[in-house]
Image (cartoon, rainbow, N blue to C red):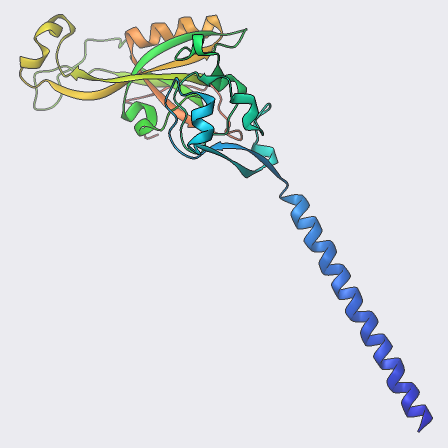
Length: 261
């Protein structure tokens, strides 16, 4: 009888020890999971904040709030306290979900202006709604800049089938692998489908169409600003949104002949 009782006690001790090991292991696993998804609380915009909005208005109307953001995605200098913006105003429009940075706020005298990094210049280009990713391009985001331009052909181009218009050879190539958007200007209607010399008669010109366009201002080195300015005058610029992990590199252009090769 005593032997049976001792065996039962021994089995109970072993079971309790095993259960403790399971809980300890689970706790270690849970801790490592939390550590792997490290979060940082930062101020995030809850709604559109127009340019020139005072910090007090932002706070009083609950336009920002502390949210958990993966630490690896938090930009350097992200704001964590509304006290830092109390006496300032937004330099440009802030979009919902945008992590707030000190550079997005300036003194009231500078409100509505743009902040240009010390080693960059600001260059603006007019792009249609489609070429700015359906309007999702906004200040603070990084974009790649593509240029579509005419290609010189060795012989006079032949007319397109069924038309009297010559085939125009075009190519598209990555112009800038990465540039930061610092402002998006007012939208306007841009007339397309007519010759530039008839701009004063665009509204009445047969076949003329209008599309929504906006001025997008980029912060780039002066050499790149020169290239962007030239491309804007001679070709068509398209912007592509990037994230921190996007990889871009300048490669050979795609043209009408190589597009599907």
